[in-house]
Amino acid sequence: MVPPARPSDTGEPDPDEPLVARARRGDEGAVRLLVDRYQRRVIGLAWGLVGDHADAEDVAQEAFLRAFRSLRTFRGQSRFRTWLFQIAINTARTHRRTRARRQEEAVGGSIDLDTTAGGGSLEQAVIARDRIHRALETLPADLREAVVLRDVNGLDYREIAAALGVPIGTVESRIFRGRARLRQALTHEPHDQGARR
Amino acid sequence: MTAPPDLHHDADPCEALIALLVRAGDGSLDDAGDRARLDRHLASCAACREALEAQQAAHVALATSFDVEPPLGFATRIAAQVQAPASWFDRFDFRQWTWRAGPVAAGLALAAWLIAASSETTIASAGGDLATVADAVVAAEAVLWSDAMDEADLVSLAWDDTVQPDTTGGDEAGAQ
Ligand SMILES: [Zn+2]
Image (cartoon, rainbow over all chains, first blue to last red; front, side, top):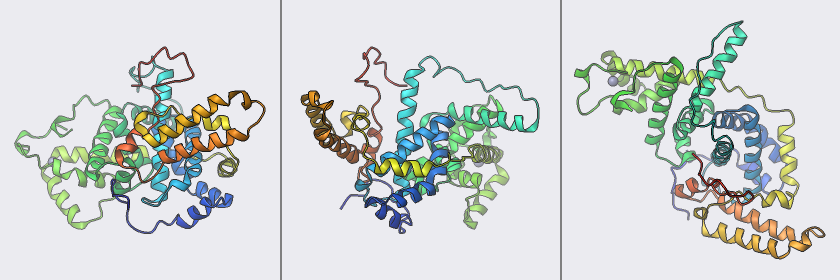
């Protein structure tokens, strides 16, 4: 009865459905199992989107609470996890806006990717990871969300389209451009992206 | 990504390969025909070879940079909080909904606000009425998270933080 306003999911039965049904009836154990199932991915998604690990846990927690407290409105038009990720994306967007307001002067400034590497390999690994996180922060939000959903969260292209509410071609284009810009930021290549965008 | 000019005329053949390049970049280009088509193009297009290399590098960088170890007891804590009725104060943290979020939600939120305002004196002593108010707010929130919403709603449903009711409202500069 609801028009297919968004790209549909796979159309296969949702493997989470039995647990979701139990959670909807107030089964605390089912909630715990669902959180267990998705906590890594939701925290990872939040981390990629907000750029800070501690904040990511807060965002993830808030997203889970919102999802389960409004579970009765979930009607299975998409997979449960797609719906959950949508909520996480929106929670992260809110978090970023709130943070941007708080740190007006910091946001928009250039982010220094030049970190002198040194010390042992562990330290270098940490520095490398930090550079990647900060490079990700330089991407426009739409590109960042697309690459994080694909490369951090591992959603397939169709599911990303459903979660973001955009056509799959848009997802492909955003991921292509997002990765290209990320690579550019990481390698300091001054090349522009050419006509390809 | 500077391409040899003679390979890229007006109709960009590379543009049509983006769907294949992104999948090749993350190892999900499964279709043998697609793979062959891409390989044929790559053999003669330095720009796309470079683009593919960038896709792969960025994919690996991201895929290996966000290893998450959920905090101990995370799931148990959330399950307990879901069951516990949220304090009415929590529920009143209703995120400054934008009017675009939908007339129903806005109406419910307004109603909840009016009830809360009118029963302000009873707040300290009794929580009974507030449960109703809080339910209205939660119901409004539930509408916002409905999976039946179309994509326009999904965009606007991102809570509008440009308005801060609790603060002095001095800077309305707007996010971003
Ligand atoms: Zn090409």
